[in-house]
Length: 88
Image (cartoon, rainbow, N blue to C red; front, side, top):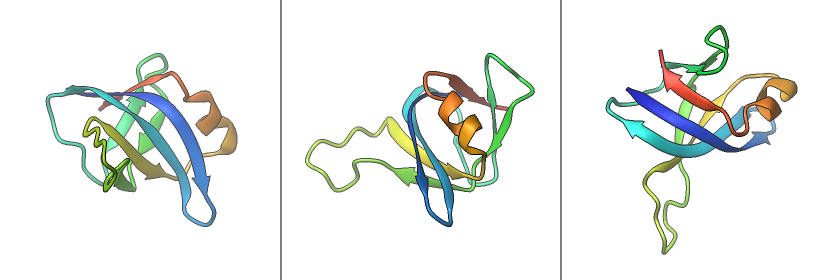
């Protein structure tokens, strides 16, 4: 199982939203093209377009903090903060 708690979202103009969070369960690998679902609303599905390593290159690396790029609406992105996403 893969699970991530969303800590922040931000938009990259022309590319979409980065969903940034902390991995709480890492029993499987997250890959480009995977679908994550909101644990509170299993109908809400979010596709992973690319994966970002947050804090990479900084003195304090936190390997359980990642971000992924996705194409979702502004309202959907803002509503994800604090939610748990898991791999389908």
